[in-house]
Amino acid sequence: MQSVLKVTWKRLPLSTNYAIAQAVKDADVDVVSAYPITPQTTVVERISELIANGELKAEMVHVESEHSAMSAAIGASAAGARAFTATSAQGLELMHELLHIASGMRLPIVMSVAARALSAPISIWGDYSDVMNTRDTSWVTLIASSAQEAYDSIIQAYRIAEDPRVFLPVMVAYDGFAMSHTYEPVLVSEASDAFKDYIPKEPKWYTLNPDRPITMGSLANPDWYYEFKYQQVVAMKNAYDVVVEADQEYGKRYERSYGIIEEDGTDDSDIVLLTYGGLYGTMKEAVGQLRRNGMKVGIARLRLFRPFPVQDITKLAEKVKAIAVLDRAITYGMSIAGPVAREIISSVYSEGLNTAVYSFIVGIGQRTVTEKDIQEIYTKARSMMESGERQKESIYWGVRE
Image: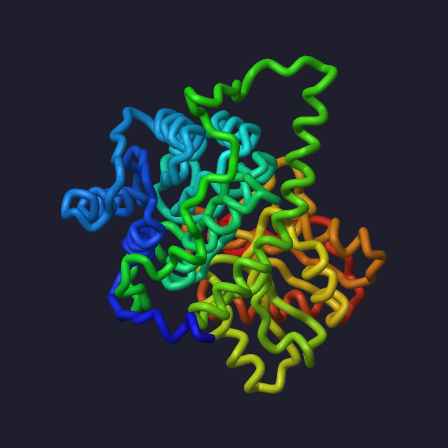
């Protein structure tokens, strides 16, 4: 706890976008490359201001597209710089091929994503369609539910990405608009070097250096390509332990930690409602009222999406009879479950558990989800649980058919 006493915090009213920018400054990032896209733009606008004001000594690379933004981040990281970028929605899709290159080259880039619905039709509002499309890109993925957590997660992301057991890029996602543009009190460090011991700037990955020439991203024939990709499998497995360690040490040093899955009321409940991102706050209010009325219902929030925390999910599933998952993205062509619900079904099945998993799709295109909606979802899920019903198809809550 001695290190905790050395940190002086100041409380600032920040949007999640501004909290991300502050974290980039406090992480002492070297290179930032980005292209503006709603609702991410104010992240990099604020970073530009910090650089212009001399508060952050970094190179700001203004590019012509998100594809170029990730390309620049890859080049910077390959040269040993601490790199950051930010995007959203179609921007994330435009850089999609580069996501695979960043992870395949084992570069510890950190990126924030203000999660947003994908076109067409055009929607600038928040859901997690974009983030869920990155499931198989080999990026470690954290999903924050508050501006404070987003700030802390960016700092933790560099600790995770730059760990020799991982050397993979890390994405920190959060709700577009509902979080990116709303303000909360956020504790940020008053000292510019508060995190230097937690995330020391000591490039440990292979870097481009004229004095020690190496080749990166070269052609791999069938005799070796498989082995390279399997190394990413191992790194992603290792990432789980590193995420846990990074969060626990952050808690010891700075008195804030978040765990892998946040739970409340799950020990004495027979059903739990699970979601991710900013919707968790609404869920807490709705379920709090249900519990005050004597309902045995708990809530859970998934913070780590990749690597998917099977062990944590199965521990949760062992406590309850049913898990109702509120997904904020659609898995097209797989009608039985949304993206996170499907992962949970696989996890429960792999452990031979009898816990029922119910899939609800909510908030697509930022369709309003109220406390009443959540309470009605609970009533529906409980009815299915008590009747022994096994769900055959996701329930698209709130859609007009």
